[in-house]
Each structure stands twice: as C-alpha cells, then as structure tokens.
Amino acid sequence: MFDRLDDLLIRYEELMEELGSPEVASDTNRFRKLMKEQSDLTPIVDAYTEYKKCKQDIEDSLSMLEEEKDEEMREMIKETLNDSKKRVEELEQELKILLLPKDPNDDKNVIVEIRAGAGGDEAALFAAEIYRMYQHYAETKNWKTEIMECDDTGIGGMKSVTFMITGAGAYSVMKYESGVHRVQRVPETESGGRIHTSTITVAVMPEAEDVDVQIDEKDIRIDVCRASGAGGQCVNTTDSAVRLTHIPTGIVIYSQTEKSQIQNKAKAFALLRTKLFDLEQQKAHDAEAELRKSQIGTGDRSEKIRTYNFPQGRVTDHRINLTLYKLDKIMNGDIQEIIDACIAADQAAKLANMNQEA
Image 1 (tube, rainbow, N blue to C red):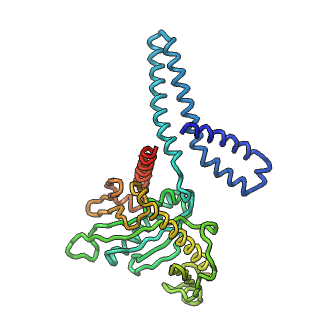
Image 2 (cartoon, one colour):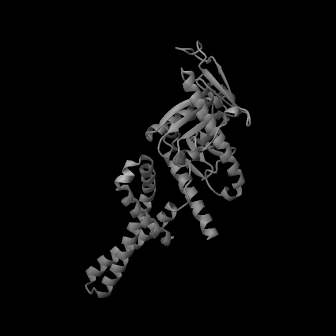
Image 3 (cartoon, rainbow, N blue to C red):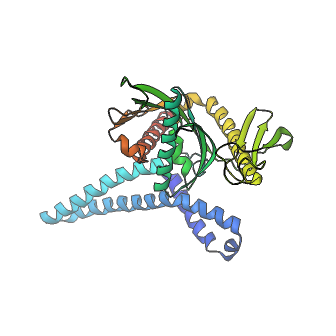
C-alpha cells in the first residue's frame, strides 16, 4: 500500500508543476482534467503527509525517551508518543478507505425515478412525500432538482415521478437510496384505525453523457402531441409534448413539463440516454452480483431497504440494521445520518473483501 502512496505523492508533485505551466493554463480541457486529478489526489496526499509526520514523531519520541532522565519530561514525551501511535492507526484506516477503487459514476448527476407500488392511493401519497424528502435533502447540499416526468393522482399523490439532481458527487450519495421503501401507517381514509402497509420503488441512475451512450437515430420513433394536465399558457394548445420510443428496447419516454417542444425533446433524450446507460449498468451488476452481494447499495431494486413506521415514529434501514426515532426530521430531508451509515458499512464490506483476497 505504501509503495503506491509514494508513487501518488510523486504524481501529485508533478501535477502541481504541470498546473503552474502557461501551456497547460491555455489548454482549457487539459487544465480541467489535471485539476480533477489533483482534486482526487489531495485528500490521499494530505492523509499520507500527516501519516509520515506521525511516524517521524514516534521515532523522535522514542529517541528522546532513551536520553531523557527527568520524570516529568518523560511523561510528556510518553503522552506525545501515545497520541502519535493512536493517530497512525486512524490514518492507516483512513488511507485504506481512500485507496478503495472508486465508482466511476460517483461524480455524476443523478436521475431518480420513484414509482408507487402496492397500496393504491396511499402508495402514491407516500411517493410524493419521498420525492419532497429528497427535494429538501438536495437543498441542504445546495443541489438543484428538476422534474422530468410526473404522473400525479390529482389528490396530492404521485403514481410516478422522475427528476434530476444536479450537484457535485450526487450519485456517490444518492445511489444508496435505490430499492423498495415501505411505509406503515393509518391512512386518512381508514375509519377503523388499522395500520396499512404500502410500498414504493426508488431507482437512482447516474446521468448519462453523450460519450456514455451512442443513440442511433434509426432506432428512435419521435411523436409529438398536445400536453395533458392542468392547462396553463401553451399547455393543451400546442403540440409541445414529446414521446420517444426506443425500438430495440421498447423504452418509451414522455416529456411534457416544458412549454417548448425543443426543451421537452432535449429532456426526453437526456432521460432515454440515462435509461439506456442504466440498462448496461444493470447487466454489469447482474454479472458481478455474487461478488457484490455482501456490499451495501448493490443497486438491486427489488431489495426492501427501509421501513417508515409512522405510529412508532421510527425509520429502519434493513441493510445495516439501523433504527432512528426521528421520522418527522427524516421526512423533512434529514437523511444524512442514514446515508453516512450506509457509506461506512459499504466501505467496511469492501475492505473485508480486499483483506480476504489479499
């Protein structure tokens, strides 16, 4: 591990030199690429630099202990020695995590698809609440959200909603939300006070760029039609809605959220690209499912990941056996504690796998 760290340190110094070069500064694409590499290496270099300093402090403290006779001074040196040893252990663990293979999609924006499952209107109402939960969470991260498709019930629920989250590292965080979310509560329409169980499915997909997926125009059928819904300027009066059909896969995308046909078409193609990219990702996931089954956030969308129990005010994440009694805060977007726990469990599983392979 430490041979590799020395190489990364050398590479970091080379990057700093290159970034200071006028030639690189004038080449925007190269400058951006090198800045990204430098940004990725900085936390590793910082941790390794501190690690080396702590190791040197240990050596210095041991040498001083051999020579020092004064008891009071010896106690101070021992305290410094113990602090350095403890910090070295922490940094070793930190460096192991930093050196784990990175998901190439982690820096991408995400497209989230929420679909009501079992439970009828109650499931649709819960789908709308989970959409708002993610919306509030995105606000705390200074991320932007934008609805791409929405099929609402007219009574405050959503049969399905597809929206984009734009922000640095969105996929690295949101990927842990894929799966089946279950709600247990007494619906407002339930006169007998019985608790009902409903489900929704959340699919989190990294946004696909043009380089990720090539779409052949011959494979696409484009239909334009009048948007349906609550009316408003241009809606229902012009052929602004766009429906794309990808003939090889049968995927159909319908976009009507914008007033302009051009904007709806751009949104539809962005969503189609992401769905096709996700299809490839899912195939790769299935191929390595055995390898990944011990990890958190495997992307298996049939997996029941979380239960929201309203009568007890609790949320339980079944993958990591975490139960929190702060349902109101979580429904208002305070999900960072759950995500942090999922990330920690995922890293621990990956480290365990690496140790087994070593």
